[in-house]
Length: 194
Length: 89
Image (cartoon, rainbow over all chains, first blue to last red; front, side, top):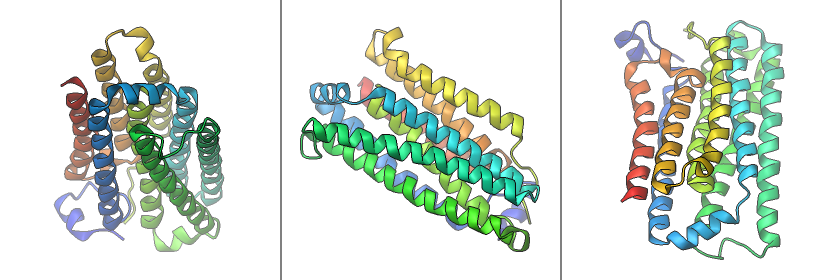
């Protein structure tokens, strides 16, 4: 669905997908911004504890997850170009590839959690790990929701539903997935690097 | 109405490679830069560059109304700026 007010004010410009999805994305970004700022302030108040906590994290796992999400987002962006060109079957293949990279992300994240649990580290260990588990698990939930959305998009594209209905739904779904990627590129240096 | 200005394949590939390269650089920053404040700022500058790529190329907001593009670019610029100020002060 095109937002008529946007088309009138900006005749050559169009917001991809539904306006409602962009407001939803803004709301999600705001929630995560509060988490990120809270994490930074807590780190300044407990510098030694956070430094020790970060040293116990697996940086390479964080990097693998970053590459997995960026690559997944790339394939989703390319899938959108295929849908624009009415190449639905190729778009489905690209979406499935994107999901495969998302599965890599989830597998690595679960491995990371299990490794920490084996060391006796839990959400109750200290403030650092409370925030670490809360923020990363909250992000993981968004990845899982994003995967459901990608599956829905693939299913709809496979049945050529976007030829009749327009691409708004597809664009909205891909925008959500890129938001998940956008959040991770802030989360990654904040928790694993600096 | 469909968005005719779809993402360019070459631009998407360049963006993807840049994002991966910057991610790898970010993780090694503490090894190259001794002072924590400096590598913190460098890592957050990298976040801004990566965020701009995702907003403009992957999310296609470079073809969207200016308001929405600026809104998302503001987020990806101001949040790292706020975090930098918290870490440095």
